[in-house]
Length: 417
Ligand code: ATP
Ligand code: MG
Image (tube, rainbow, N blue to C red; front, side, top):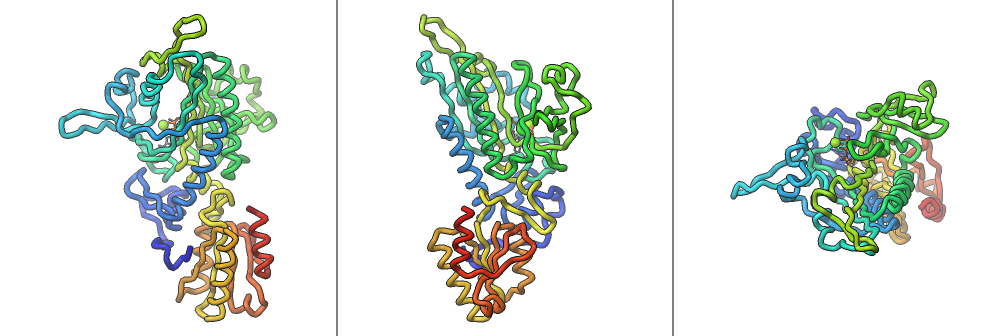
């Protein structure tokens, strides 16, 4: 894509009320636009990143057998009354229409998926089933000061699994731990992300959170580096340490962000709707459930929090908006002609390239925009590089570039992807 055609421009400042690093860099780079506290729109660059994250998650969910759906955001009040959450969930948005009828604006979808499944599941032969979606969620968060880490409208992947027996559930749940690990590895934050024991609420002993270590995190976790085990401060007590076979003095405290979690729901949501099946002997049982969430927008914000420098974002190659940022320096015609040739060659071999072909801009302005936007490779065509019969290629993380030929450039970029 030619940068001269991109309708967004980089900005020197982010909104005055924006205190989080992720929102500041993403707004300045033109990835997102702030509408109000906790509510953001995705612009072309931001949407490209979001779609890449979405595709990684979708591939992994499909791989474990998940079936994708898209459920409604408007949710019947009766369903929420059945589970008791119409009154109990304090961050639920309640919307009323012209007749005064109230509906919930979906913060999560147990109240929708369970009644759907009631139409299709009745026998032990129907299991297991896992269903997921990637969709906007709405929550009346008290504080929305962390940019896209905590939105009032945000994007979540929520999966729900249904099982006829505990063994089957546990198998699936354990597989999901590995799938989540793969996802966080693929988006580039696996090395900072810990499977973390957290309290399970009334129905089960533990849930598992995936916590990414960063100073801006709202949670506190304790990590036992030797075993790679982590636990949330909220569950921290001597009894739990004993159960997990951990020693207090070995634990290191960190701030962290919960990027995902997996939950044993047992019959918490299936029972209120009487979601049941008959076994081989014709006996009736309530269905067992698990749920598995990842906040895509939070994940994107987390990547920015942990993988950026003062002068901009450093996108991992797997989710970068473009693979290569091509800069034409100066308005000299030979330079522009050469840069266009490089651009066409990159497009021809399928490299996703952002081409800074904007006229009347200084080299300094183009360099600082490239740093801010944070594309993994930067290729510069300038009077100097033309004289040296090459292109100056540099990775975002490197200090200095080197002059390479067009063939070498194509080879290097293609070998990395
Ligand atoms: P938190 O404790 O951070 O409020 P939660 O326990 O309410 O999270 P879940 O209801 O389990 O979160 O949602 C699943 C996932 O959705 C979370 O792991 C997180 O990645 C994401 N998420 C939850 N709330 C938000 C939010 N307000 N903005 C962005 N992502 C969110
Ligand atoms: Mg919450």
